[in-house]
Image 1 (cartoon, rainbow, N blue to C red):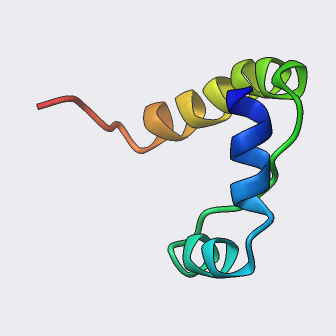
Image 2: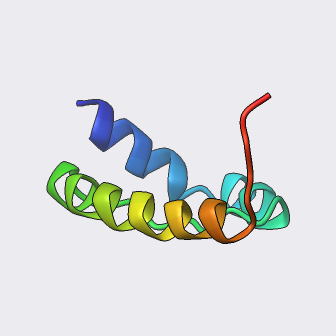
Length: 57
């Protein structure tokens, strides 16, 4: 149910434009696609954090 509502919201032009203006890539999709994307995003951003030597304060 939440996935359906989120995808409906992401199809609204005004919301898409606002998110894109913030640099957020709007994709939407199924819960399975989100589950598959999370490890890829974690790996990608872990490399960025390590390379940039970013530390928590």
